[in-house]
Length: 291
Image (cartoon, rainbow, N blue to C red; front, side, top):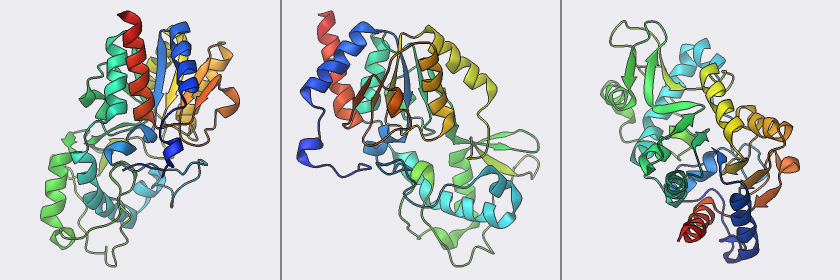
């Protein structure tokens, strides 16, 4: 399932543009790769934004909302209970596999992702910085105990059987477009160690990316020859800032993305094509260079 319906003429990168991307990597062999939601849409995980960079629907919950009221936590966990299985079942697609190949070939020393689905690691990428954390974990805000999201799902289903047979349209990152008529009785999961408040181990909107991750990503950018953005509109500053910093360092930026990105004025090269087709073709061309 893709994020954007394509016409046949739009389904693959233009050969000349692909050649341009090939030459870009030949000139700049050590890439700082930054990925976003668009790289996982072929794995069945919807993206947040349309091809103009606007929200497809209402924005995700903010940290302030989640912490602020029980009602918002009930809404979050109810939607997550219905939506999380889609992410749990998702498999890496051609784009994830191609980036793992590029890492193995020495072109991607470190991959930085805004995604929380863990698909890069499952495809074989080893050095991955998850800017926004991972949806497979849940932490207690009171005692710090870490829980697996799979275990929390079992708790949610046991405590809220009325939602077991409910279906809703999938949303990004394990969310679902669920508007349950009676959330007053929904049981929010609590820490099994201390009874404290649980929060997914992801960076919510309105929450800062941990400094250590930003520092590690900055070091990776410093060591790179150029930046390659794949599947991100860069509308969120946590990713866009790396393009700003790259420009200040005089490092060229290329992007593979369907639709507008916030960094379009900064780009040396834009490939308006699906990530899977383009990255697979690029990996093949670079492998041919080594033969």
